[in-house]
Every structure is written in structure tokens, then in C-alpha cells.
Length: 81
Image (tube, rainbow, N blue to C red; front, side, top):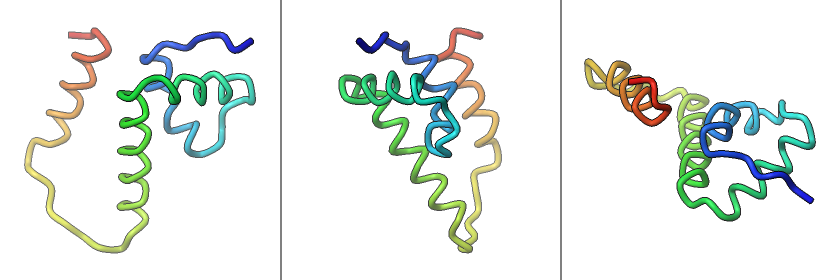
């Protein structure tokens, strides 16, 4: 039996999941969650794309306040606002 995991827990661990740095029990819970949660699956895919882009040597200019907007969005989603 796999114990459910919340979206917030998945978001906190998605980077570790990609790096295969989660323990087997957590990995199993996350995999079960990705199968039923389209939002978290999209987060996983997006994070993998960012990792792939960062591994590429191509350079591109980011909008000036992108970091602030990302943190504000994350804070709002995680209930920190």
C-alpha cells in the first residue's frame, strides 16, 4: 500500500526526485502521485526541461524581474503570501 503524498510535498522534493536522491519509499509515493496528478506531472516535466536547458551551453537573456516573479508565484502556491 502506497501512502498518498500532497502536491506541496512533491514540489519540495521534485529536484531530488530528478536527481534520484530520494529514498525508495518517497520515490514510490511520488511516482504514484505523478500518475494521478496532471499538475505535478507538468511540474516534473517542466523541471526536467529546465535541467536540460541548463546543461546546454546556449546562452539566452532572461527578463529582468523573472526571479522575483517565480518566487512570488511559488510563495502564493505554497501559501506563504
